[in-house]
Image 1 (tube, one colour):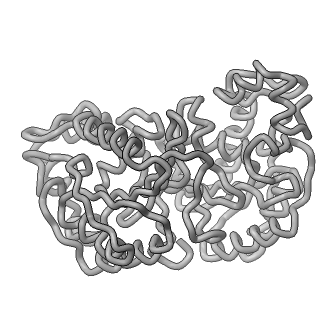
Image 2 (tube, rainbow, N blue to C red; image 1 turned 180 degrees about the horizontal axis):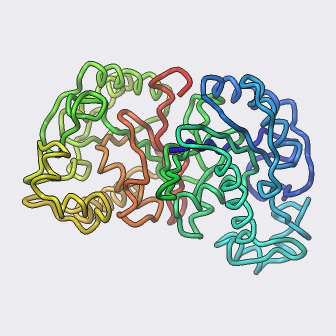
Image 3 (tube, one colour; image 1 turned 135 degrees about the vertical axis):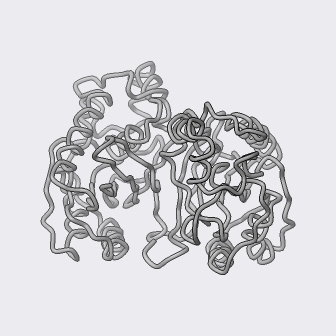
Length: 424
């Protein structure tokens, strides 16, 4: 695997936050503001221990300067790639969103719905930008080998487009993926299969330990995977856990305390958890700090693996070779003997989402689930089909942040683990 870290540049004078007051920056060559330099320096410290083998940047100075600061601790030269440059906004460049919406109302409305469906007057289309950005990424990947890590520094429109493309998201999901300044998005690239796995999205805990939020009054979900047990990968031979009621091991208990320390300052209004012991133990330290009752919910129960429960992967592959092969390639087609399918789990999770959206408008709610449950929920909120669960990573005691805005779910971060180890 080649690890890819995709980073948005630091703040400029025109980065005033998304909204009608924001200007279209694009190829206007703005420098970093003083705050942007500081953001880049903090990001450099966060990545100082990463074994970076190369760092690539948009040619625009706000990206190059950010990349140079990040590259300095590694003794690397920044390599600029024109394909990573920001979008050519043509007639929209330098204008405020409100002004563009007034002058080109139909086009702006279509752009806000699906930016890949329009071309900007005098500029380029987001579809063209996607093609050149992906080409630039592959130019960088071709210079590296298995086991190496590279960094890509670019602009919001480019990092968001790359994230959507590498994750295989549908075009309208573009607006539902948040990309904050000097964030970190991590992917693993398999040079043999040509596939990308989401390791983490929009990680900004090096800049701000509190959780990010989107505008709007919808419910905000902090989705947590339970801590480590004796049957988890990393603790020993991984087994199909499912409904087996395992306790946290010593590392899992430490992870639970780390989750509590990370979230104790958040305005969490309610805590829902899988009824299984490992999930309840994970959230207990936080619930005690916040004085909240733990509410078990069957919608968060781990998948019922039926006859596979308790088997190692080798045992399942030997006993059910065809079904196991299907599980590893097209998991949505599997109904476990004596158990459930992914669709069964998705149905109960969708019912939970509807219930929480109605019960907790404008509130922050913590949910504790399991690896497969969290993968299914993440794919559902990203509008990915369930065969993509292997492309979405969920580490033990990781955090994921979603917010409902109108009828859409926005992904604010995925698989955040920086509370578990120095440097994330």
